[in-house]
Image (cartoon, rainbow, N blue to C red; front, side):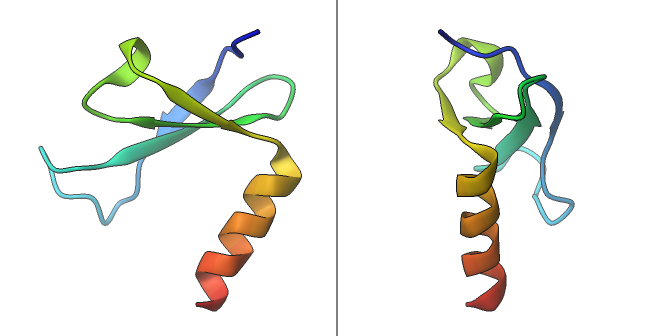
Length: 62
């Protein structure tokens, strides 16, 4: 079942009208990632909170 996400946000480093993604959170704690140009009509990638934390840790340590 597709989660409902809120609080969508994108990086402050994003350039307007560029290729960006935004991140939202469901009430159950699942993280959603989607293309800003497609918004709610596009595909949302879904990650468990521990998967997202591992991903972010890897990015920050790269």
